[in-house]
Image 1 (spheres, rainbow, N blue to C red):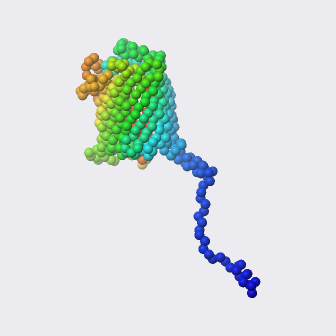
Image 2: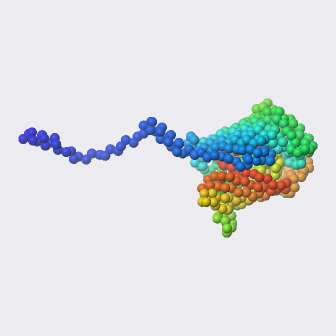
Image 3: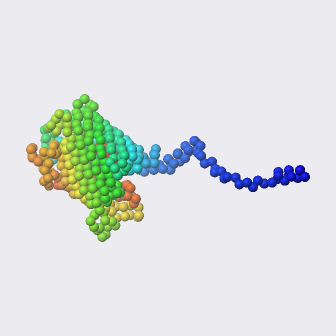
Length: 424
């Protein structure tokens, strides 16, 4: 009997419910490294970079350019871009690295650098009283490197504080006349100052702080919002010349939807206004004696329709009003954006003494002691965007001024993280 009971308990099944134990999903260190590698590889995005303007330039000749842009190299939001351009009379390289997206990261850093050499840097003179009929081609080598931080403690719609440090190097190796006889039209003082730079290496550090606020709704193609930036910078030479100067810059863009929609266009579009200005003051010199390589350039981004380097002075301003909007679509993948803008601007030795709101419709010599009038310009252009409107593929702007027409790249506002070297 006892033997039977023992056998019964031995074969009796245990019907007690046991708790379900979740499988062990904790990654081992090796598994974590493998997953990070897979995530980095799958988030890596590489695209080629090419500039149509590099194929031919009247001043630089025939050439080619190419580069690569990489996103997700060390993090999901970083950006690396490297470019090189080689032409008959210009050779240069440029690179930038942005650690993150300023719209999503409260603290980002931009590293940038460029170096170039050309025998076709155009020189007309210093200030607004340069002789427009005479110009030189400078043989110039230049390089720069910059470190810039972007800190937005209040988020992407608040103020972005942007300290920077930039090293700048320039060397004028020689010059030649643009056209036979141009040397006679260069003012003697301008010629003496550029001869004083010839064969010398000028270099130094610029330290600055900018405050930026960007409220554009769609940054590459805005229809409302604004972009405001103010910056103060100090330059100190390191070449033994003892040169030092202060520079203050300001720019403002405002976008608003157009008052009405043109029937045959796919959307209403937007109108915008733009104002930019820069003032420089050197130490211990009231006569505007800054070397040419450090003077602000009212370039073709700010006053289209004039030759490059036409307006260089201690101070400069530019005002513009325009309209932009989508004018067409192609195969459901690309958008065509049209832009028209009217501009006025001028360069000054001292904007506070020489400014006048009058317009001058010819590029004539301004007499000593006279006020400096504003020069007008009209421009139309087109950008091609991907359908998601995140990035423009290519764009061009044709400007018309009193002296003729010119072609420039089209980009209304450079991004907060863009490093923009003066490849001119």
